[in-house]
Length: 398
Image (cartoon, rainbow, N blue to C red; front, side, top):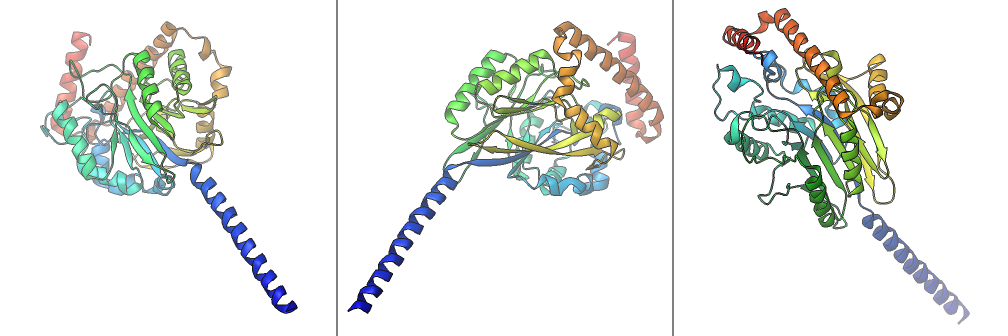
């Protein structure tokens, strides 16, 4: 009887342990599921077309020659996150293309090359920027179809009711994170309404963000095309808008348009990348060739964590990881302390704009030098059109 009692006690203890272990495991599993996390990477401006000053030998031509080798050196870094986002700065469609007419050819990507981005690990692209309408509404809409066919979702398009349509990432616990794209840059190509998410009024943008936040149970990520070109620090207006975006529920801001790297700021419980610079682009200035792959880990329990892979756009247009002094330069450009230590925080809007005009003039004269040095690379039909167009502009004062 005693042995039977002992055996019974032993079985009872084993059952209790099993039950306690089951309860503990269920609690741990529930805890793990309930804590949504998201690992997202972002890169800056992506051009699949030839810049006007590089017509015939720019990015469209480079992709045609090198194909996936343009970004194969960094593709392993692009694939590490659940989502890797970029800003598609050129209309990638052949709809309405007049092959030998320079205005129709420049800044127009080959849709066949979208698959190379997908293959490399870029799986979400923003289309809200100041080049969206360069080749008309039909070409823009065709690009959206080409993106879908390539397996790359797009963001930066309105839903018809004045609200941008976010990309929705569903977590295992049922929560949903929203990623959306907007542009605050003035429209340059068409009059009237545009199909992409153009936002000229900061107040209405913030009201829109509040609505997105109210519908979003996970994280809210904003990709924004803003600011002025070639300046490696944001304006006070940008800083204020970025802070307002975070205050109204955005977790991470990924900025672009300046074509150069700008600092990263940790504000409250949010992250602001003021400009990720160029990622795939055919600009020639050295400072436009420094870039990063930004990696962010979001968790409901902790503040956002981030690191980055410093990269360089080579002279041949291909992207590689940076090294040595290149990395030090990139680290310096991203430093928020650099922004605070200079007079940038005290610049008026007029002073900031004047600095931009100075940089714009430098860029214009550098484009003339680049054109002359590389004149042998241009197809004759584009060379003649470029020279003629430049003469007309100089004579007209534009």
